Image 1: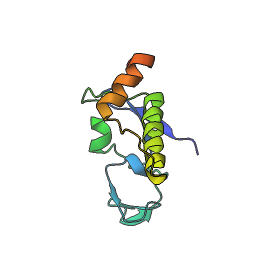
Image 2: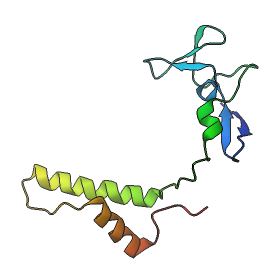
Image 3: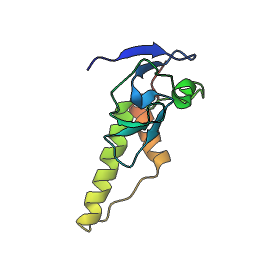
Image 4: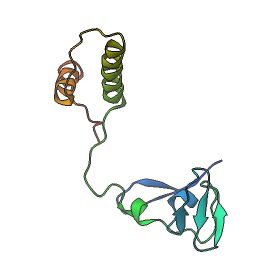
Length: 116
């Protein structure tokens, strides 16, 4: 399904669909949402002519936050999996703090953050 895309005031692209609509209400089911405008269950990818951008989507990009590189997140996962495997095998293996993992990654690869 091809979404229509609109940018919020911070330049972030937002897909126009029920998942990003101000009228959605989350349900306990991941596959459904409740539309408070039409008073019915809807699928997350549906969209209607009364779509309005949700507050969360309007705020996206406003915090000045940073996005971590996928390679860094993968590195953290691999370190933690190695530690977990060592624990399962009852092998003495030093566990690293997040600060140490970050330092190790940055020494080899530079910043953990995606550059804008």
